Amino acid sequence: MSTATTHGHAHDHHDDHHGPAKGLMRWVTTTNHKDIGTLYLVFALVMLFVGGAMALIIRLELFQPGLQFVNPDFFNQMTTMHALIMVFGMIMPAFVGFANWMIPMMIGAPDMALPRLNNWSFWILPFASGILVSTLFMDGGGPAGGWTLYPPLVLQTGNAFPFAIFAVHLLGMSSIMGAINIIVTIMNMRAPGMTLLKMPLFVWTWLITAYLLIGAMPVLAGGVTMLLTDQFFGTSFFSAAGGGDPVLFQHIFWFFGHPEVYIIILPAFGIVSQIIPTFSRKPLFGYDSMVYATASIGFLSYIVWAHHMFTVGMPLAGMMFFMLSTMLIAIPTGVKVFNWLSTMWRGSLTFETPMLFAIGFLFLFTIGGFSGLMLAITPADFQYHDTYFVVAHFHYVLVPGALFGALGGAYYWLPKWTGHMYDETLGKVHFWMSAIFVNVTFFPQHFLGLAGMPRRIPDYATQFADWNMVSSIGAFGFGFAQLLFVYVVIKCVRGGKPATAEVWDNPEGLEWTVPSPAPYHTFDEAPVIK
Amino acid sequence: MAAAPRNPSRPGDDDAVVARRIRRTAWLLGLLAVVFYVGFIAATALRS
Image 1 (spheres, rainbow over the protein chains, first blue to last red):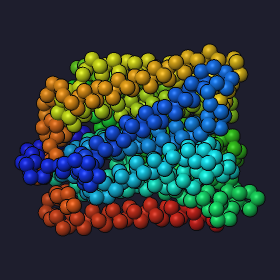
Image 2: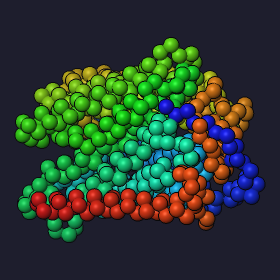
Image 3: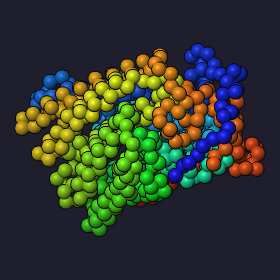
Image 4: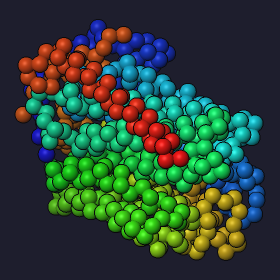
């Protein structure tokens, strides 16, 4: 368990001559980890609404059976782009933003190890995302074959195809560069005395996430490069007619895609592991086991990929292996849930907004985990596959899982970033609206899936009408609730009750030893860790 | 743009040692990513 404290308070004495540049160029040329963290977070928030608007178009169309608002091809573009934007443009950049802001402060480093690479990693993102969104306006529309980009369907994309592939390459490059920076920073920039097993859990989860990124993103890049050469250079990697194998792409995609799930969720685990001890007023229960559980999840994430493709056909031994390896992940995940609950057990609990989001995460992510276990059972998966049950499952993991983790982290560290306390009442209203509407949106999708409603369709049989209507109402409620979050953030940035250095009641970690807002440069002189 | 000031993670290491270690780790990780990228394409090509 990290018991790091600092003797050195040498954080703010360079402020007067190393402050930020003025104007727009501050943000274009900045190499400061806090500036770049802010850029990532603001960008992710913007993309949350871009991807969210696409989700609302999907739910609007599905409000009633029949075709109402959009044609089927555009509907398919929306499902594809919503996923690509939310995964690559929103949730991953959001957690990289947290990493940029918090990792140097948590390990007592003055900045990221490679600040210029850091700037480049960020600035690739808006261009890549811009290219991706622009495909919607190209001849033939954007990619519409799903975010999995399976051939041969994806090869039917119009002029947008090479642009979408280029955008995915750029987004992958940005992620890999960010991951390199994070690993290098953690391995080389820790303050003296900050041993690996004294690092805060958030740093640990990001270290493992960064390794997953370096292992997984090049695989996706390789896969989409081969799609590109199949389309334009006459190769037949995935074309059966030319001797290739379209199923091979699915293996390649999911060899990337399953670690990607943990790339998204592990940083949220880390944030929740910071929040729960603070508001339980107890050290994290089972710190070492948390670290080992995270590492186990990281390892297991590489040997479960084919559970996404049971229905494609594979040998019985393959099905058994991937079913059992998938179920194994429940063990380290269960260790984590047990440790979070044990941290709260007999703690002096208070329920400020970050804690509410952490507890919401705990309950609702676990629902997503359990439905994941159901999907892991091969014969059952034959029934669930490609139904709304799967949509419900992964949205429980990603929205009240990853997104709630990010929102909880934002509330937790906002006072440290801005120097002001956010409006607690509005924060709680935001939480309860989000928690209620996320369930109204996604819980009925379990029923729809079990009743046989397929995913990725713009129209459906009338027996699915009622729960679809409920789900759409929930989606609009959830979307509007996030506008409240924007208001809370803007209000907090503009003013509010001044935050103390500690912000909360005796929280643990180096970030709480620096003033609020955190000075532009922190830890120019290394703190001493006990 | 100046690189960030660095602090040694191990007592006794000076800035130059840490900077060298940072560069070496970064290049190795970058190389690893390139090997994965090329390796997966090559492996798929051999199988197709």
